[in-house]
Length: 305
Image 1 (tube, one colour):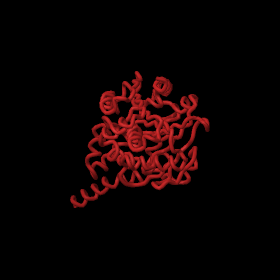
Image 2 (cartoon, rainbow, N blue to C red):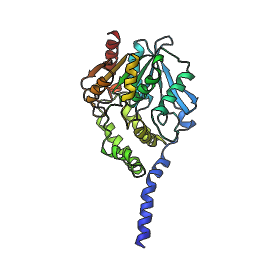
Image 3 (cartoon, rainbow, N blue to C red):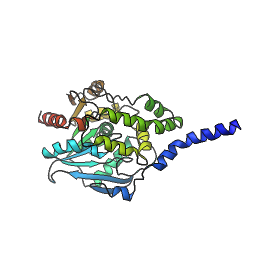
Image 4 (tube, rainbow, N blue to C red):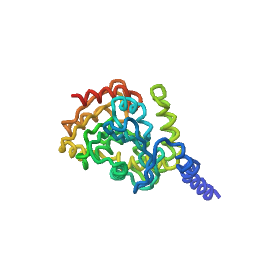
């Protein structure tokens, strides 16, 4: 019965993403027992966070990107702590040790998490908000609504202007169902190749930690949800709103960045002519961990100027 055989083969292929997901490690109490820092039960789900640096230093809150949880900040954190900052780092939903809620992951999904975490920690104002990659889009969305709470907005290779996710990902984002299947099957291998390309430049075991994320339930699904909900559309309106508030904005770019190419700097300049920029030679998209010293020096210069 060739028809039956084809049907069974098709059903087997369709079930592959679900099977892969079932075999991944659940993010449960047992896994979270390994986590540094603390947890907050927020309205949107459990959030893993940690404080670094002196208790009385100026507060900087760090928002990570699409696929690298809060550990992406560790190399830069050492330098910022040496500058006197008190840092709050945390895992976005769907990443690290935080909860894995289902559903769309647009800017509001993430800014609600940030707003709830700030309330949980009693942080009301005078905050330096630092966003990396997708975290730059999240930080910008937050600043557009609550600039009065911020001292400064710092954007590292920020998403929201132009973004090159690759052909496979771009197709998967646009086509539900078939795109879901393709993404769940292809994204892990693409991530492994990307980590391998950065192997000589990464620090703090970032590559190994990124690969570990692939083995945790809910991560791949969350990445696709954020690609569709947060990274699909430009952030022009939000950047123009921030410009109207007069909030100081500093943007730092990697000259060799292939994910957020340098032409994004020109777009941000059009939307916010008051933003100050610094380009780090030789840096790709992983600049927070490959060029942490240069970022710290750039921040020191931008703040002094």
